[in-house]
Amino acid sequence: MQEYYFYMDLSHEQCMAYYHGHVEFIQVVEDGGKRIRFPAHHIRRHVSTLGVRGRFRLLLDENNRFVALEKVV
Image 1 (tube, rainbow, N blue to C red):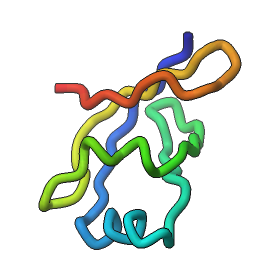
Image 2: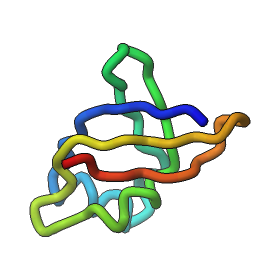
Image 3: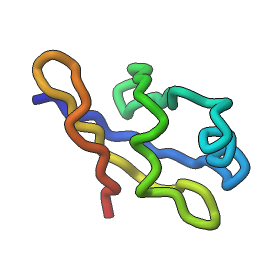
């Protein structure tokens, strides 16, 4: 299993672009500098009235398939 850590800061308006179907993928830069892209629907449970802000851990399986996106405290 692979794990990537990154900080995400999306405004509420940016998150609404996903809900309206204008955004299909989220692209982030993990701590090591690697760019990672994943389907935007995985942020749904992390969206608040402020948007999405915080440090996250993305878990992928050995085939680079999504396993989990967790907010790190």
